[in-house]
Image (cartoon, rainbow, N blue to C red; front, side, top):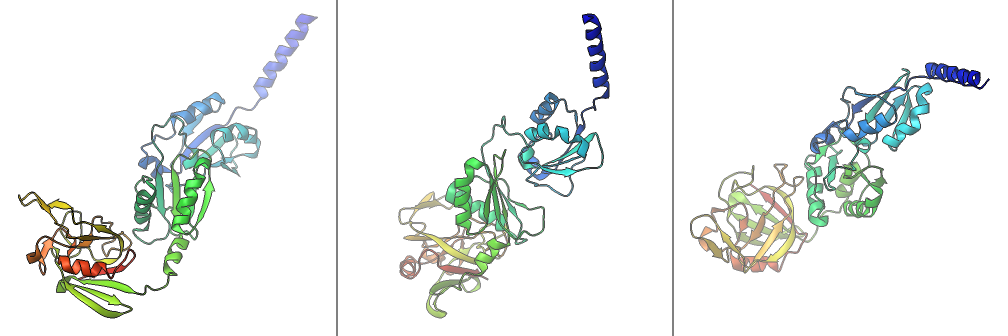
Length: 362
């Protein structure tokens, strides 16, 4: 009797296995190819394939999602009768959106940035700034400011997948919400949204970041205009000329095109710091070695961000300052900065402050 029962149960088990549906094949599509390229990540990550295999789910590589290069969230498309596999799939792809598909036996996973596995990745957190405004240079400026203000290293800034975004959003892990909130407050626009499985912080700049800048009141008080063709620096107060000083500019004519070309950049900038440079030295590469007092008594550092320069490129180290060489004033002599007589720099120091507007034009 026992043998018959065992035999019947064995037959039933075989029938069950024969009738049980085969697990669906998971077809993986890369919806964040721009990001995986920046981070030099293989797709799919070996960790992902191992997890799927442990669940009994075979996987294969499908076509790259040509409509997205920086998709953040993962999307799962599956037939309603394959939804019995949804829970284990979501353990591999947390917070994935779920959509119905007409083909049974195939699950299409469009993996976004939060669908990548980072637990064994040996790199530190960075920020990826995506420009969703269409205004050139905005992402590069934001990345530069985040690095200077918060010490947060940036991946190469990029253009967002969509042409325009209305709202700025900063995506981060839950542990990084406090830092992300500081970045948001520093920008003065946008929302913070936490996501599972993110290592890098990702910010999409929207139109609200532009609108905040556009609604600032027109500057009043003191402003500076540098006329390169006249070798002259003009100081205005509420639109009235209150001072005019001779200057020296970059050795080469025209707007700055590349780093080290000894041209003075053109655009609309601000003074970001006023530094005592009386003890500074500089080697001009002319065989004379380091020159004491090369920058005079004061160094008015300028912003020269990509969104401010006429070239649309970010420059650093550009300033208005004094000089050790009075004979250079009135000529093309500098490496790109604007030089003044030291006495004139002292006079200017009494009129300007951090935030003073400076326009440099030909």
